[in-house]
Amino acid sequence: MQMRRTRTRMMTKWRQSCWETKKISIRTSILEEKATACNMLCCYADELKEGFFPWIEEVAQIMVPLLKFYFHEEVRKAAVNTLPELLLAAKLAVEKGCGKDISWLKQLLDFILGSPVDKESGSGFLEALRKEPEVEITGYMLQSLQEILLAVGELLEAHQLAAIVEELRQALAKSEERRQELKERTKSEDFDEEELELLMNETEQEESVYDGVADCLGAMLKKYHTDALPFVDQLMPLVLPTLASDRSAEDRRIAICIFDDMVEYAHANGACLKYLEVFMPHLLAGCIDENADVRQCAAYGLGVAAQHLGGSVQPVCQDALQRLIRVVQHQESRSKENEMATDNAISAIGKICEFQGGSMDISQALQVWLGALPIRSDLAEALIAHEQLVRMVESQNRALLGNNNESLPRIIGVFGELVAAGEDLLSLELKQRCVAILKQIQSSMPDSINQIVAALPPESQSALKTAIA
Image (cartoon, rainbow, N blue to C red; front, top):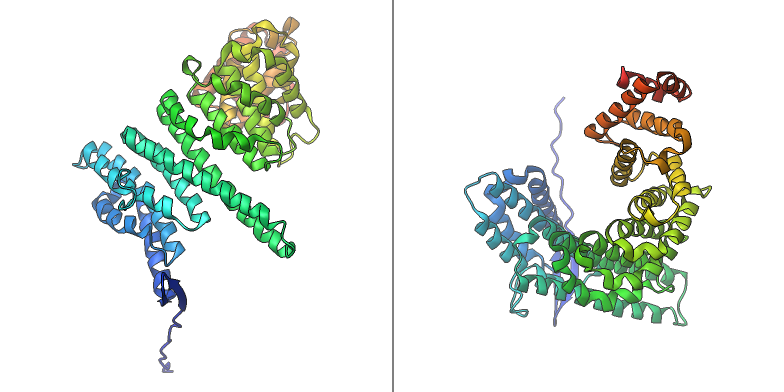
């Protein structure tokens, strides 16, 4: 049977917009195709990495002007997402001998960022960030800026860093202004449930801006360590007010995360101690906060502070331990909502005991810590805590092992769970150390270890018997 051929006519979409003093009509279907094409280029750069080298410069020339393509948000988003991928691809290409050197990568970075000197005529990422009219896209841009800092931050010059920090400061200041306007809207006589829903959505967008600024500061601290602190200092007048109890849990979480990054990456010579007195009360209160995300970052902060800040945190360690133990022993500690916060509390207990335990009784805290292992949700903290456990057993830590090695059954039980779980919870090197300890125990106390293993769950029994065979 002969099929009748038909022609399908595509419906063309038009949208009217006002631009300065003119009213213009835009064929949106074409813009959607443009956005799709840009997203495809982003995907190619992401997937091909250094293999995208032949097209990096050409695509950069296309994408940078599109940062200010105000006719279509999705086009701008695609351009924003593509630029970090281009820089990472370019860096990998240079490292693998593409024929270009580091000066080419630096020129590409400078072109993408634009001139920080002439703010009016600049045409790069920083100028686009300053002029971006949509809060949501500002959030995307800040996340991309963080990726740029992490990828090629070592190539930035002092004046470029200063320009970046100024853009971060302006983004945060403008966000605070908009938040005040949101508060004023709640006082309107017309404020209703529909308006409340809109306001909540806009508040979330403002929080994403703050989160993006914090991520950029974290990237700078990770790259430059104490050298980044003078830049971070410039934003502290805007950050510190967000610790107040009347701010949202998300705001408080972000502020605490900024301090966590300072402690982790800029602790050398006590450089970040000037903020300890301000932040420590919020870490102590935050680790038992009702909000799980606040608890998580506060517990993490207590752990890294104990690890890196020496005697400066000794006066609060006993209080911190008691609070963290409350978190770990709470009846809902292992619920899906709370498990990441609980894992960070477990890890923090271990760090406080190891790095601050010399002047206080940590036997109870260590037993709580041991009883809560292994960590299963926060895999980064899992590797840290499980390596700590192995290290303490290797050194025959008496506070951990207990009188007459009474903690040995629990330690072997944890080792069994770790060996059975595989590489998610411990590295290959750490597994080998676990096995060496188990073989040593088997050699010196064969009857005891056999009894202990026999009391474990079948999966752990099988894993241990295979490991020490």
